[in-house]
Length: 238
Image (cartoon, rainbow, N blue to C red):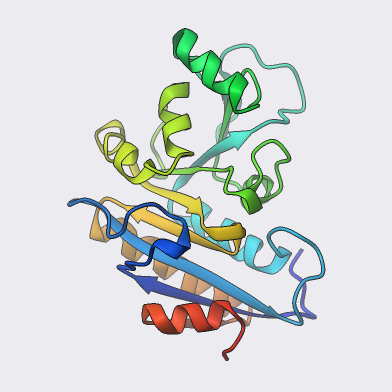
């Protein structure tokens, strides 16, 4: 539920270049488009992690324009292979990717098996922000966007581990041919997100949906230069 007592502001920055966002080398390679998504809330949330108001706006916007798939450690029931939950949702066990993939998972203390939850429901997407094993605030989550009517994507463990690493932008480029149109990753401390898209059309679609949902919720929306984005993120403005 939206926290109506909090005044949230949403802001974006296209084509950032700073390394301090902890989103890997910027700008991305040719063919990729990066946009920073930021939010601030007055009064500030006292709880760690993503505040409820920005989380709900993001969930509603993403589900309106894409099929959204993310790492999930709590399926609610045993999962063996792919499970079709209903027309809008699917839970899949990620291909372990051989012995090397299992070793990397064990060293990184990631769940085994890894599960990928694909959904078009905002209430389900809220789970991606507070998964204990894939913490958003520690940059431990990755969100795959595909066309709304596309089937749930198929990814192996090696690919997902690469998307969780510093070189995620380069790893993401290979997914464009597999039907992935965009990827969302949390930035430093989970206080912002990097949206990597592979076409101008999906970039515009996601940003238009975010602006629409923010304004429908009575929130402020702004497109900023990178220096201004940093100031707003630090709650110096507005």
